[in-house]
Length: 358
Image (cartoon, rainbow, N blue to C red; front, side):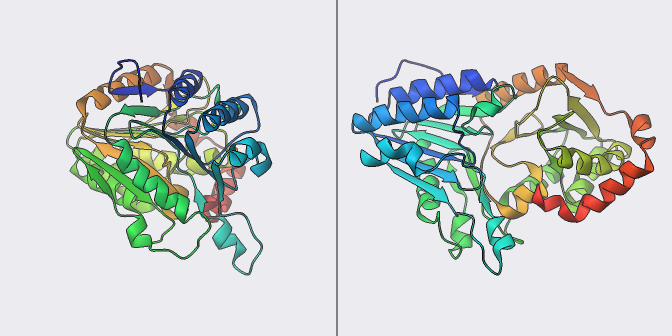
């Protein structure tokens, strides 16, 4: 694959710039393009990707697309030309009625990957859809030899796309490449490798923990770990949107904010628009970036993929992004939170049993 010389790592938080970069890289593909996404829109962005992928299929480039059926706003007919040209499009675990329909249908593929020619990887918070154009995202582009490692993870997802019985231990085994660990989650009550990695890093933190997430709904053990870190003089910052795209999650989140604030955790609300990025940074020394939200649903029910590492160039890019994000944040107002109405408090409590649905 012939590409212009470029930095090994690039970070995008502006969706339009990110999509343009992805499309430019796809246009240059010579061998294969693999895409894994939770949502794919039948909208200008989705159509643009489809049209460029069709062009590449005509050129003989191998195309594999895996879309979660719950998040798909398209069907096989949308990709008919790609399929006719030999491309493969699969929809992850189609929603079906059965005696355990709720349990099975709730296990979704939330991963976001684009892999090109064993040289380019995008690991992202962003889906392929126009609805996210006004959001703030987190997408890391890597140029180099790590792509074949991600390809192995993608091909396993592609293989088990319609299976409910598979080797979960194998499917959650991390891949390692130099200073990087690729962490994979599948629905599980016990495995939860991303959650375990978060806890490990929180407990080891010496100076600072920064969590940027659209949905902050961790369980009690995770909240306790964050508070304990803050109480041993680690600076703990939680950055979330003032208003996310899921209002119910905002209401649920609200219940835990007082507890976190009293535990010396700093809570910052991003105000301009939805903050959909997913970044975890400890001591400006180690990061996690990928598809996982900091919530019960991602830890317990979702197929997720995240990259953990110590690469200083990536950490520098993430620190710059976080600094810019914080400029548009306002702090949590504990006094205002304390004065919320009885109705609000009751509603927060009633929603707790449903926290894994959102």
